[in-house]
Structures are given as C-alpha cells and as structure tokens.
Amino acid sequence: MLYYLFDFIEENYNLPGARLFQYISFRAAFALIFALLISTIFGKRIILFLQRKQIGESVRELGLQGQVEKAGTPTMGGLIIIIATLIPVLLFNQLDNIYIILLIITTIWMGAIGFLDDYIKTFKKNKEGLKGKFKVIGQIGLGLIVGATMYFHEDVTVREANVIKNTVEETKIEQANEVKSTTTTIPFVKNNELDYSKALTWISEDLGAYAWIIFIPIVIFIVTAVSNGANLTDGVDGLAAGSSAIIVLTLGIFAWVSGNLIFSDYLDVMYIPRSGEMTIYIAAFVGALIGFLWYNTYPAQIFMGDTGSLTIGGIIAVIAIATRKELLIPILCGIFFIENLSVVLQVGWFKYTRKRFGEGRRVFLMSPLHHHYQKLGFHESKIVVRFWIIGILLAVITIVTLKIR
Image 1 (cartoon, one colour):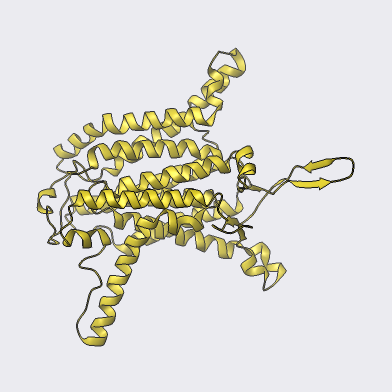
Image 2: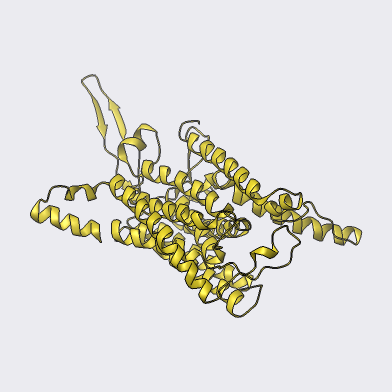
C-alpha cells in the first residue's frame, strides 16, 4: 500500500525521498524491521492472550527429559509469524505481482490447515489433531494452485540468454525475449538448466506442450515434502524457526540475484522477471521468524504449532520453485530432509523387521532425529545450536553453487 501511495506522490508531487520506495533494497529493509518489531512487541500480547484463553500444548508422554514442564505452554504461535509477515508485505510490496500473490495465498492456505490442526488438538482435546489424509489433501491443493499458476500464468516467465554476434566491424548483442518455460536450475553443472518438458519430448515433439503433466505433480510433491519436513523439525525449542530463518535468508539471496538483470547476467544465473519483488516478502518473513525466536528459544514461552510449521514449509517450497532452485532443496533444506528421512527409515525398518523377525527393531532411539539425540542425553539447546551450525554450512554450500559448476 505504501508503495502505491509513494509512487503516486512521486509521480504527481515530486516529493523528495518518495522515489526510495521504488528500490527493492529499501523496501526489504523496512519490511524486515517492521516484521521484527511486530513479532517482538505484539508477540508478547498474543502469548498473554493465549495464556488467558488457556490455549496450551497437550504434551504426549514420550519419555523425554524436560517434557513434562512444557505442558500448558501456549501453542498456535505460528499466528505471530503469519501476522508479522503479512502486515509488512501489505505495506511494502507490489500486491499485483504474481509471485507475491502466490506467497500470500500460500501463507493463508497453509496457516489455515495448521490452525485447524492446532484447534482440534487444543479445543477438542484430540492429541492426534487433523487427520493426516486431510493435511495431505490441503498440501496437494496448494501444490495444484502453485503448479498451475507457475505453468499457465502469463507473468511467470524467464528471459533467455542474450545472443552475441561478432562481425569484422563490431560486436552486436541482441536482447533476449521473455518466454514461458518449465526450465529449472541444476546445481554443480556448467550448462545448468533442465527443462521438465524434455521428459516428454524424447517420446514425441508434440508432447512438449503438455509439460504440465510432469511439472505440476513435481510442484505438488515439493510442497508436500517440504511442509511435512518443517512440521517434523518442529520438536525442540527454536529448532524449526532458526533453521527456517537460515533457509529463507539464503533463498532471499537467490530471489534478489534472479530478479536483478545485471547480477544474474554476471553470475550466469537464470534471469526471472518480476521475481525480485519476492525479496521484500522474504525480508518480512525472516524478520518474523527472528522475532518469534525471541520467545521460542529455550525455554520456550510459546510453540509455533502446526499453524507455524506447515506455513513455513509451504512458503519455503513456493519460494524455491518460483526462483527455479527447487533442485537445491535437498542441500539447502538438509535439516528438514534428514528429519524426514529419519522417520521414514525408522518406520520402514520397524515394519520390515517385525514382519521378518516377529518383532520390530529401530534404527534410532527415537525419531525424528532430534529426539534421538535427546534420548542420548544431549540438552535440547545444544541440539538446536548444532543443527543451526549445520544449517549455516548447508546454506553456504548452496550459495556457492552460484559459481561452482
């Protein structure tokens, strides 16, 4: 809203300083500051409100140290993250940008699913919450919306590489056009672009127009996997919020580079018109996550609940897809990936050994992985900080892929 207001003022009254709102870096900085202030100042009020309404966590007995003391801690803290993100976005973003529209829809959509899950757990006293199949249906629905929009919307384009023609007289650069494409980036590869439509055109050239058959299911899978990964990571104080802040900040770098014609050309990164506007959304999201950490670090005064974790995972997935960096998710979201993998291994091995030997055996003392280390006697603060360190290392490796091919 402020973007449009100051654009009007600049155009009609030429007010000094109004032009600053045209710069993504300026608006991103203010979005981060506003989100941080909203989450820290109003976060406390939300915590007190939840305490008055006795909206507390019902902790399942898992035999973990310090678990009993957490009973009654306010949950649904994801509302802080959502509110602190959306208010700066509405103030500083161009709201007609297709990527911002997708991210707002993602925030509200996944937030609603998570809120319903937390509501059932808290008010209906059902510790299982929303049934898994309904969560998956919601995730598939969002993936379908995102995938279809990315594929069919006319504003979702990439710019082809400029054509350089050398002659005896001069060197001529022909500017490339914006095109619809299902191309994405492959890490650590020199000619690092993969077109999903090639999965069909090797059968027949006529099938290239039906690339959505491949593209949309891939988007659905990514949205579902990453949101579930974030959900599983939310198990000890500060782990999900801190790890997510590192991931999102890294994606912010990619969004800014991909949306900047000069830097994308210099780094030989796919230029994605209009994607730079996501930098402002990402800045607000990072500010909201850091502000939430003020209250979520050990000992947590509030839990994000599924309201927060599912929303975080959905947003990360959509940003990665929009910046054409989804193939970097196993590296960048390595914490989410290993948490997911630990559960799959634990459940799969238990079922296999029970069928093979008559009794179930375990790979880990407990899954997800952070609970395994709790069982080994590590304090959860130490687990969280070490996971953050690993997350930072993975983020650096991800950024390095800009140059190492």
